[in-house]
Image (cartoon, rainbow, N blue to C red):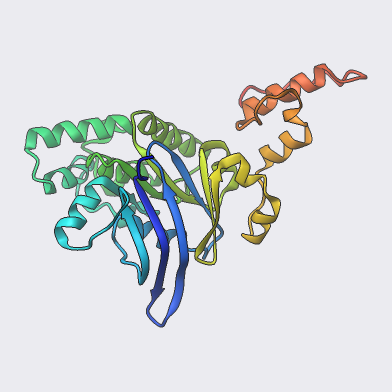
Length: 292
């Protein structure tokens, strides 16, 4: 079995004043996955993310790249950050150039790429995030959602193997969330491994294929999404609520005919219609909008 792309083993981190942020934390990031780091505020999610690209150096334990302990000299960090791109929660913390194209080109130019190759990467990144028409826009005139996608494009232009996102849907309206997740799904299907932090169990259930639950600086459990989120005691300990879609699917006894639990509203509605058609006595003729 090949080593995971990235892993943490016994990770510990203390902020000044001996404030413990991470303690004896284990995490495995496998290639090709969508992994949700799920936890309430203060659980250590952001601190952990800052270890995944070498921004923070642990005070104990180790971060492993391809099974080998990561190094923190300048050359090693540059190689690491080419492979693992980090997108912060607040896009204004990452945007600094005058225009969108200039901002997205910063990373490739720092890699020493030619202007022609840089232009190609900028074009690909903007198209992947569906913001190509914004290329010449001033960054300060963008909406919050547009800034989020530009920040992701700037990291994507570096062509990382792993894209790490801190609360990617925070501050977005429903339309913005839909567009962002669609763009990220496209990146994933093109081969990018995704890791994102969130406190939203609904998002983790519907979109991630693996989940790691954090609480008080450690990972309580990591595994397949449904298996982890069905554990009510685990979620209660982490101060999280079970996703409503999962609770409804369980109430409908979704597994009784051997089908997997629905992970989207559309799949849940299909199951509900089937249950109503088979009701005895028949249930009411209920109609639902397709996008419910």
